[in-house]
Image (cartoon, rainbow, N blue to C red):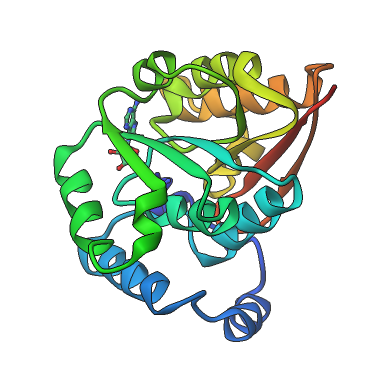
Length: 219
Ligand SMILES: C[S@@+](CC[C@H](N)C(=O)[O-])C[C@H]1O[C@@H](n2cnc3c(N)ncnc32)[C@H](O)[C@@H]1O
């Protein structure tokens, strides 16, 4: 979810950001199509740069089973699906049925979509209805729900697995004193303190997109 426009600041200088974008390019024609769909509808995405990090890190741990708190129409799920391979599984969650319809339509002609299931409902309820352990999770839902998603995840991500969260820099707002009524920023600040102080996690923040936290679940 994007942060308020008036609070946004570029993490990188425009020149360096543009340089990285030129080097990167879209991961595939489908990734390009998904990004164009988001642009057309003003949908807030994790972005190509963070998407690649999801894929690199999940491949790096040999991840085969991933859960997403907040999937939209499947952009971030696409990078996880590339990482887990044909035998892997990406379980997504989304409370907006229209997004799930868009997911089905946009992935209809690509077999990679068979690795992704996006279930409708509150992300934490959907997660709690699943069983077994996950290799990685991504938290990308309403910010007020981040801490509940974190607690649920710590119990269900295997040692050596990853808990990742988007928007932890929140357009720069988490680095400033939060306004009294800004519960999203306050919760993100609390979330960041928790992921850095929990002895079960080894955490850092990748300064790409809107800030992607990466926490390794320690054995
Ligand atoms: C910022 S979008 C990101 C989607 C996806 N991670 C991506 O980058 O492609 C977040 C999505 O999560 C959904 N969402 C937000 N809070 C949710 C919740 N508590 N339960 C289920 N879906 C939620 C929103 O409807 C939206 O589609």
